[in-house]
Length: 220
Image (cartoon, rainbow, N blue to C red; front, side, top):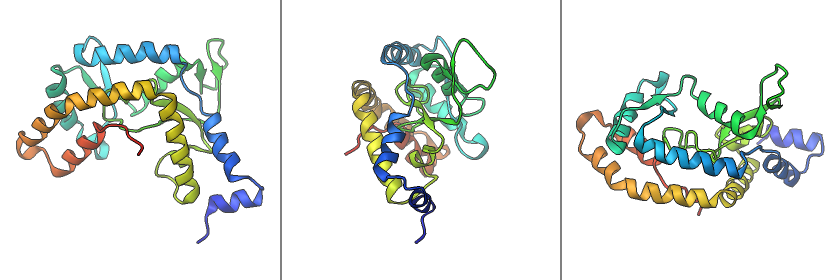
């Protein structure tokens, strides 16, 4: 089987290990002091609803988003949850403001300008209000490496990169991930009660998706 990435790397003598290291080392993350502050705000705001909480839309043309909005109301006791206007506006804004790096082309003295970086969610789960804007889950990845972080590429190099990438950032943000996992553990009874007792509107597909979105982050 011909692998386009492998052919490219062979042509230009790019070492696989060096490419993996490049992808990890050149990813831009939010500084830890900002991560802690924002994470504490998110945890409190999800239950208080003092400020709007955003998530990514669900389903084709976001037609199923209401299913998640109803779930959030049951889990957290208020209705101040909203679909992100572009599915990435709020994470992008958060990353720009807290990292100090911006992808805008217009010159600015406020941010360090970058180009050809993609906003990426390390551990996904973008319909989970804790993780859509979690400052430890949102990073800038060099665009040349972004296909390796999701489903846009396949093969051994993709598998190796994803494993190394996830393990590296799991270790880097382990303290926050353990807090998140503990919160998800506590939410499971409420989640299962809602999915089991809300009639025909709750499809099998939604149940599977909701459980995945509120699952623990475990790499083993």
